[in-house]
Length: 537
Ligand code: GLN
Image (tube, rainbow, N blue to C red; front, side, top):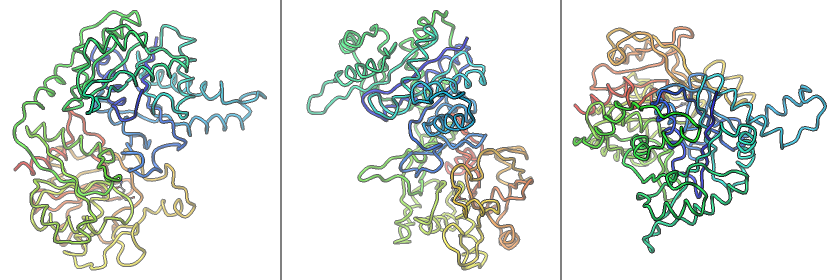
């Protein structure tokens, strides 16, 4: 029998529902259960692929090429497995299938209505996930916050699911207890109100994960318990932590796993998170620091700097640094400043390694090229991810191979387009077919013996995830190679360049794919590890 655990958010967004969901999954997995997860995003977009990262945060790509939400990345990192399109749902997808069915007469002449047909579609999708993943537990994270119009139909689906499967459904509310600085006290009222709102949707939470800056004490737990109808030991204190990977360990201090199993009438099993616990301990004990700079453009919103757009890159840096026994210190460097004043690239000297992550469009690209030039000349370890590789090739073409007007077709139609749009993409762009049409998901790549890439992976066949429309042009390959660039990874099927590197440099390597997407805390990505080794040297 599959059981369903819904995770909903109260009070405000950004309190860590995704990580809470991944952590519950990790605990159940460690107790020997098969666990799957679904991220529900209430937006109309069919997927995250058409959204600006500043708007959405990172677009996480799965092996099957789904452009999904960053929470899927959290699920993959915590559960140590890959997910696919069945693990991600949006309002757009749900409506799209209901409308298609209606057009196919699949509702047999019935009036198709928002209720019950939309929630029914949601339920059927959740069940498909459970079946496909042969899961004992499916964790369903409903995006947004309780009380929004946006996620109402998903809450209705959850309610309906419980109404017809009383003992198979469990509700967790991840709430937030603010501590206003002028009062200095942890306040429970917003949580009480959020639970009332959830009650109005016909749902009673079974457990409340009370997020706050500080631990939630007994008095406040009792207060929440009394006003929200949740047994006091099902109010879980979830204070801020240094590393998100501590969260499953912290939850287990409150026997969260056992409590969930009890509600389902299941016997508790011993949990095995030894390796995970060891990592958490290690993170706390690290003394030496490695300084990594990320040169990008998706991190400023008004007066605030957000790092959501590069989440997997940050996590991959951490995983590799920890393995090498270093504490990473990550700094955001806005590419545009190097455009305005190239001399500012001198600050890159302060870093042990520089990463240029993925990106789209012209803004900041010349600044990034300036940063790459500095790293190449000053022998600062450099790692380029997707756009990072493309720009490294442009820099090398211009400044080393004498192709002065080297550029990318993404930025201009003039000059020597060493980076051009993939042939199959041309038609798509012309017809404005942007959604879900990039070169997406996992593709094979063959590595060159003796290259840095080979040294990292220690094998010649690899598979990595992609998300791009543009590509290094083979007609320039020889000229670049003659000047010393080594194209050490090739997709043989289409003869596409996937990796470029410079041998006479401590570490100068770029990938057309996104290695960060496959890095896991207990299995850091080999290229990030190799980069980190150079950086810590
Ligand atoms: N904009 C580039 C392309 O589409 C790079 C994409 C990326 O960095 N993911 O090819």
